[in-house]
Image 1 (cartoon, rainbow, N blue to C red):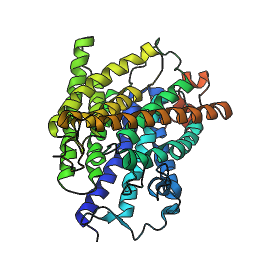
Image 2: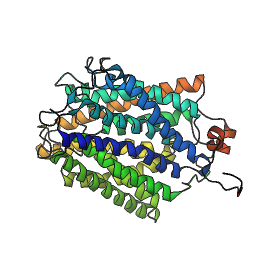
Image 3: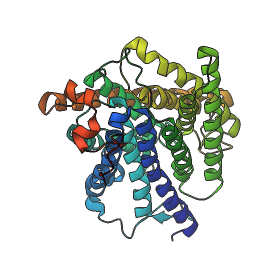
Amino acid sequence: MINSGDTAWVLASAALVLFMTPGLAIFYGGMVRAKSALNMMMMSFAAIGITTIIWVLYGYSLTFGTSQGGFIGDIGHIGLSGTLDQVVGAEGHQIPTLAFAMFQLTFAIITVALLSGAIADRAKYGSWVLFVAAWVTLVYIPVAHWAFASQSGTGGWIIDKLGALDFAGGTVVEINSGAAALALAIVLGKRDGFRRDPMRPHNMPLVLLGAGMLWFGWFGFNAGSALSAGSLAATAMINTQIASAAAAMSWITFEKFRDGKATTLGVASGAIAGAVVITPACGYVNPIGALILGLIAGVASSYAVSRKYKFGYDDSLDVVGVHGVSGIVGMIGIGLFATATVNATGKEGLFINGSPDLLIKQLIAIVAVAAFSFCATWLIATVITRTIGFRVPREEELTGLDTTYHAESAYDITGNSNRY
């Protein structure tokens, strides 16, 4: 019953997506100042550990168990019980349930790790650990059930009842993380010196290396979501490449006209924005659609990132501007460019069949996920702030979080030859 080729592809894709989180750690670690680089990386590795434990205990079951009214799964697979001898997938393309569970676990890990970029340089590490556990449980799991748990009309309300499309996580990963990042940035407040000090990335080679790792891993993220090694996976993969490359170029072109310089941070951020925008749409649009969405995303995200200073919120590493904005563009793009020639869902976008039906469904999904994620995250962060505290004292923020919380530093600049 198990298709070995499809299983191999999904297992490889799971490894690629897991590889993205260390890539994110390097990407984020290079973007912050040197005094908090290790702390930034540690936040991503905490997300790996905590999310994995939760996923095994109850996360998979509540996400993909039998739906309870379209809002949450049941507890039939607590501790991954009942999954060892099960398969998922269409006839002829069945894979072991544990391969699917592993693949989806990596999505949960990268999503919560993304949020750390919004509160760089100023969050207590212990409070972050508690936040990860609470956020995965109360925010990620319900949203993933809504959009991913298809059970032939009785699954999550977004995918099975509303009928909105999201191939690889435009709502679950991108809009979810963007809205949550905005809530976190508001609750924790601005970094000391925001708007006054430059706060430039301390290591641009690390940023580019991390961006390259993310770009590489994103092929598993998107093409792996086909859950089979066939034409749909091939379409998703090339669409991912096209959109990422197009957004990288449109971002730095926009920078050149706006600021007079095309930056390395811009090309890295643009590539990520392109991968984000095509995430929900990669299995529904053709390559020209991917090209258009990539070109739009580079400009839209670059502009959105610059607006945080006008609106006064300190989203340190631009999770809102890159993931939130490009995720929205990608979901809307499905409502405009989706075509049955790519995916035989029978649903097509406004520019293909002239009907706004799918676009309306996409907009409803966007608003619902963004509103829920923002409100729930704001509540979780506020409770932590008013109990154990979420933000570090000013003295620790100025000193740097590496030595304060980890008794280490990213670089030995003391010249002490006796340090081993």
